[in-house]
Each structure stands twice: as C-alpha cells, then as structure tokens.
Image (cartoon, rainbow, N blue to C red; front, side, top):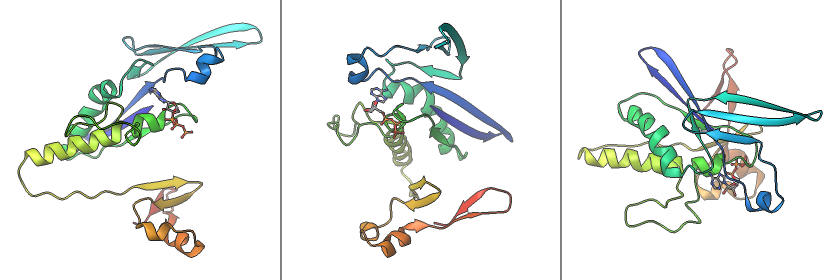
Length: 199
Ligand SMILES: Nc1ncnc2c1ncn2[C@@H]1O[C@H](COP(=O)(O)OP(=O)(O)OP(=O)(O)O)[C@@H](O)[C@H]1O
C-alpha cells in the first residue's frame, strides 16, 4: 500500500492505493485459500472471511487498486509519476508503504534490484521498485535541464523507537556498542506529541 500527501492550494490530498501480491510458491503448494479479490478497474477489493461457519464478503474501495498481475512499471507509471512530477514542481510529497509482514512493502518500494540483472544501458531492471524509479525520474529531469543542481538524500530507519542513519559511514556500524550509539540519532518529542530528530 502506498499513500501520497500533497499540500497544494493549502489543502491536503491523501491517496490510498492498495496492492495485492501474487501467491508465493509455498502458498500455491499448500493450496492456500484466496481471501482477497481485486478489481483494478472498479478500484475495489473484496475480502471473504468465514466466521463461525458463515461466509462474510466485504468490499472496500480505494483511490487505486493494483492486483497480483500488476507490474512494477504499471504501478510506478500510474500512481507515482504524478507525485514525483509534483516534487519537481517544488511541492513536498510523501509515499509510504503500510501492511503486515510479507505483504510486499519492500518489493513495491525497493524491488529486486540487487538480485535482478541490469536492464539495457541506462534502464532499470524490470523488478525495480518505487525508490530507484523515483531517483531515476528525478535525475533524468535534472539532467534534462542542463543547469547546476544539488540533491540531498537522507535514509533513516525507525525501528522500535530507535532512529538509525543508514547512510552513516560503514566504520560507524562496526559491532562496538559505542559505535552503534554514534550511528543512532536522538529521537525527541516536541511537546505537541510530534517526534523530531536531528540529522
Ligand atoms: N507484487 C509482487 N510480485 C511478486 N512477488 C512479490 C510481490 N510482492 C511481494 N512479493 C514477494 O513476496 C515476498 C514478501 O514480500 P516483501 O519482503 O516485500 O514483504 P514486506 O511487506 O516488505 O515484509 P516485511 O514487513 O516482513 O519486511 C518476497 O519474496 C517478495 O519478493
């Protein structure tokens, strides 16, 4: 799942997209029951549950639905390109994936770049996810402008209320506790119950 926030015309625009991954080989082997059916065209997802022997079907509507056949490229072009275009126009946007373990957040956001073979020169592997595609879209647009530019990137992990700078130099991540503490960033509350951190 992913959502985007747009602060245009002083209103906040949140979109909620649903992506349903295909069955894994293990799920196919064990004949796992299909409980979710996607209708990409109608932007609907039907969920079937059997509670106390009674089948209950419920239908949920989203801003966009990507069923198990949706490719990384489809999702990126239909849902993410417009958001990155807004970033390039100067708006702040957020895309995040939410869902229970094993539902495909990493696949959607990062993709299988490390395992996949590179595509033709300058092309991303077909399984590249949202992050490498967004980086490529941004750099392609900047390079097309033939002007000087600078790009700042931060990559932080928030896990069990600890923030870690994943781009900290490698030597800081070596085993010793002291080094680990250096790599971790302080996490503070600002009195409005919002979390702040320093990079
Ligand atoms: N759309 C997809 N098409 C094919 N395989 C997928 C898809 N989405 C996920 N998978 C596969 O399903 C498995 C679980 O996906 P993934 O690791 O992305 O889940 P996750 O939500 O990030 O899990 P966790 O929260 O545990 O990190 C992986 O093997 C991944 O390759």
